[in-house]
Image (cartoon, rainbow, N blue to C red; front, side, top):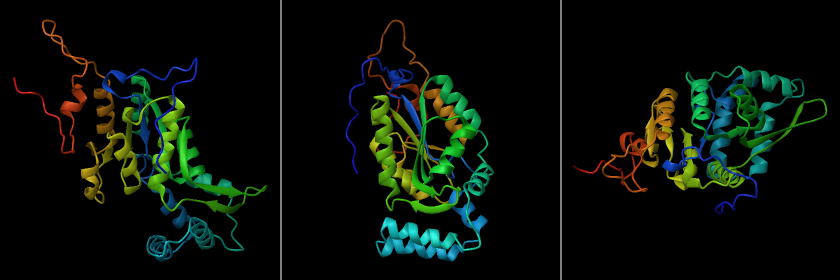
Length: 275
């Protein structure tokens, strides 16, 4: 599911130039556990009384038995539904509206807009959930890995998903880049889990929100932040102009300050040149 470099901008379409002097034009955000304190799938399973062991068994079947996406969706739906308990759009929307955002989420979005970057949500979760969080944060563009299907009475009747969410998130990032005529290297993807690692790899700019259970992913990230306030500071620093001594102009390829002073966890970590 590899994607190709974006096509040239259509006539009359000019992508945002904010941050491009430092190689950035957009921020792509994961949702569950990155922007939120709660996890959408766990909250729905709790709401519906789904056994954690049954969910664990289903995940194991996907991993070890190569269960197809269609069979996985059917199994999950069967775990959720009973004849006397219809699942409605309103029930799920209400649950998603109650999911707690991390402290600093609204401030982060204000800063992204202030510096002029494009912003997009790409989530491994449900389309209705992604829409709900996007509305709460005032974000127009969002992609989801799972689609909930409702009948004319807004009762859940089906589910579409992928068994390779990391590849789908990478593909969706490519679609976002193509829409805005920007390169993958101009995107700052932010996430916390294995499903985000292909976005990290294809951009080279991955930002890991450090949690107790994801320390093994640190080596895949370019930047590591411990909270959304740290991410906001990184966004602010990324948009700062390069300071140039008046007597000795520096070349246009000079490393941006935000690349020098923020934590980089790749072997090619950049350090200031010795005097």
